[in-house]
Image 1 (tube, rainbow, N blue to C red):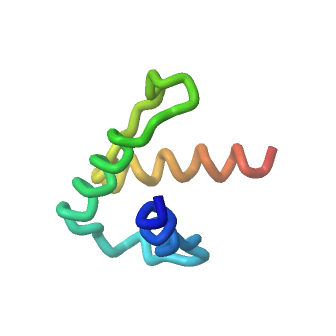
Image 2 (tube, one colour; image 1 turned 135 degrees about the horizontal axis):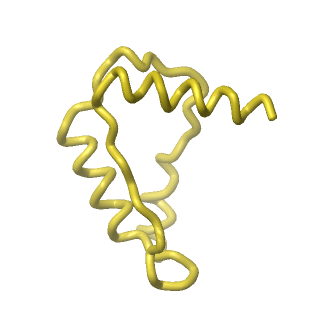
Length: 71
């Protein structure tokens, strides 16, 4: 159990990031596997994860997200 707590100590919040820099495929795969293994409260893992690499689609998502943040 203490190993789990130690493993969770690495977490931090990103305050600022450069979205023009790509994330390495190995890191994306690691994150997706961690999400897959994470349990939800219902045990059904009722979520979907989308990895968006197309810059045009990312801009459209960002525009919608920015509009939602203002509401």
